Image (cartoon, rainbow, N blue to C red; front, side, top):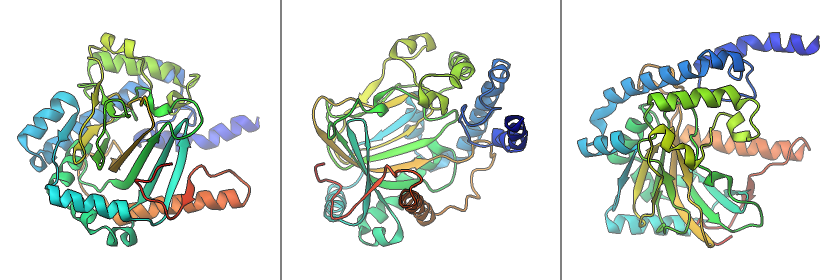
Length: 343
């Protein structure tokens, strides 16, 4: 009886979340309903989200060059080598390398990830990075591919593979981030070799084809009871052997030199490449995911500074929860460490 009352009380919230970016099949009984997904709930959300994203992108197309638009429409990502003039890039890399302010670390399997939030106090010590974030090319690509005239969350991020004892890095499984178009960007500050965890993407997998939509339907029907936690949370994993059935090619690895910018739609299938040795990858990393069911491109009130402060607040709340004995905080605070230091 109490469980039924609890479900009834949650129904208004679960219903409202249908028109948001909420993707968890496990935490929302409507989104996770096998019967509703058999009858098209998930595929309706996917189709509507993509139609709106395509309409927004058409209105933002002037922000990017015709060549970049063509690359994105074909592949789902854009690669810009030698993104910054060499002197500007050297200054950017040196400033980040010498920065030893507060950062956070998390261990995922055998991989250590570091993140530095770019609040105003941090950016004041990294003027070259502030210049990058105001670059028309950086801003245009992120806005066009993300289909919103909105600021992304931006971090300085380090990926240290084979740096801890543990199982394989879970991010090396091929996956889509969510059910609608989203954007991620990497300005690599280190060379990325083929055998040291390059960004990997299935070209053309950002497009919503009939085959992909049917795959989304099948995944949604079984997602709530999936043994894979990421599937239950709506970040669907795909096996390499399934790609051919969707009319897709094999993944490609973007092994690129430092000073390369990559911007991708992470509805497309992607992964962190596997590394055969200890490796360090340092990058300026951006991530944009707004509500998929808003038809307009602008009117977003989140500034870059506000997004950074929100991230820092999340870390502080995690610390407080641990101090109160409620839940261990996986993101550990570190000081006196550079993004480029070994684990």
